[in-house]
Every structure is written in C-alpha cells, then in structure tokens.
Image 1: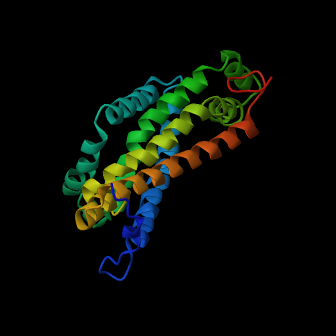
Image 2: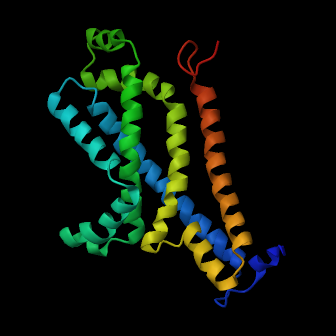
Image 3: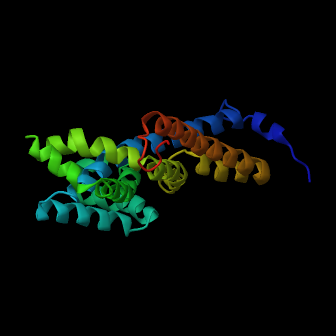
Length: 234
C-alpha cells in the first residue's frame, strides 16, 4: 500500500494546500465545539439547578427542557435549527449557520449536563441546604455559596466526558455545510482519492482535541478536589 503524505502539500487550486485547508477546518471544529460547550454549561447548569428547587413549576420547566433535548437525535436537531426554526421565526433567517449549529449542539448537550448537575446537587447532604438557609441566606445565595461550589467539584469527571463528546459531536456540522474536519475529509478524499491519509489525519486531530480537553479537566479536578468527597484526595 502506498502511503503518500505529500498529498497534504498539494495545491487545492484555491491558493492553499490541503494542509492549510485541514488546519482551517480544525479551527472551525474547535470553534463550534467550544462555543457550544459554553452554551451547554450555562443552560445545562441552570436547568440542573431548577430541577432541584422546591418550586414544582421550576422543576417541571427543567424536566421538560431535559427530556425534550435529550430524546431527539442530534442530527435531527441540527436540521430543525437550520431548516425549520428560521422558517417559524423570521429574524433567524439572517443568522449564520454557525450560530444555529452552536445552539443545536449546545442545547442538545445542555440536557445531558443538566442531569449531571442535578445528580451533583442531590449527592450533597441535605443538611448543607438547611444550614445555608438557617444562616439567613436566601435560596439563590445558598445555591451560589454553599451547594454549587461542592456540586461542581463532584461532577467534574462526567462534565469532562461531555466536553470530550461535544468535540466529537461537532462532526455533524458538516450536514449544514460548516467547513469543519468531517466536511474537509469528505471533500478532500473525493478530490485526491487518498482517503487513508486524509481520514487518519482527521482522526488524529479529533483525538488530540478530545485528549487535550481531558488533560485540562484533570488539572482542574486536581486543583479543586475536596478530600473526602467523590474524586477527592486522601
């Protein structure tokens, strides 16, 4: 089998090499994933918190959000945000497809993060909530200063998995013509007929991206761990 990595140095005919095209696609992949991760963490944390409050209405809202976005396949959600939602909400017709993909991927992942945050809060002794309220803190203050700092420490490992998944799930963005790694691989393979080299290189970049997230999260986990808690020290 002839392995020719010189294919990446070939001119695409557009003034750049396939290597430059691939690195540009990698940048789009990371941009989609990181922006979606921010959305997922913010929305997912909020919904997870709502699901643990004493208010039945807020719990219902959080549960409805979680069940809606986690029970619809991601690719279907991508198409809904790209084709259906802009047709129903006219101002969204002028929104770039990049933003729509970020929202779709972010909301899909937020449902999973909501489950993790809920589990983290519920893993804490109930006495912590009561102690905060007994000290005169309001319920939001109790969450802010007592519950959430501990809950997020507990759920760093599962949140790491979600952050790694969002890198891999960003590959569905090719379906709406975002120039990320998967789209690059498909187009470059068709143009060069060198699928082995192309897909191995793209696979390596996905691995590097996800592994970097894993290592960064591990450093954070070691910095904030609490002895005696899940993932804590001795």
